[in-house]
Image (cartoon, rainbow, N blue to C red; front, top):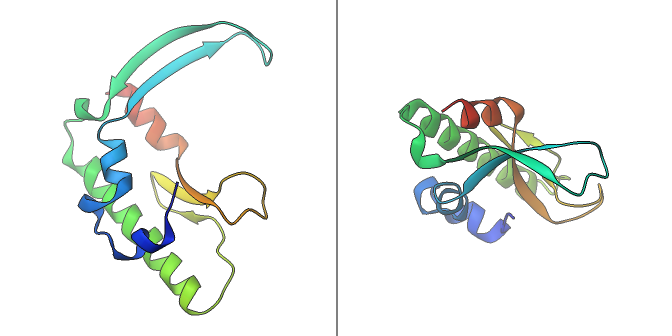
Length: 116
């Protein structure tokens, strides 16, 4: 989730996003169909397995871009649409008209997470 007040004032390394992602457990699961009641655990990894500082630098760059564009939208009283970075994006959580926003991992970032 994105808290607009803290997004605008928190630096990347102080942010809720950074505190969450550095402690999250990523689980890749294979499901057999849309209504499957069981799945197969394929891989489990954590952010701590990343050895490449460029990944963190790109996440920081994406966070700062989202933060800047969010700030511009608020200052100019514009609707806030999906803001994309290379690895993460912010978009509505729930229906299109929802005011609640959240960070989402993009496909390329997910590939990196599970190739580590």
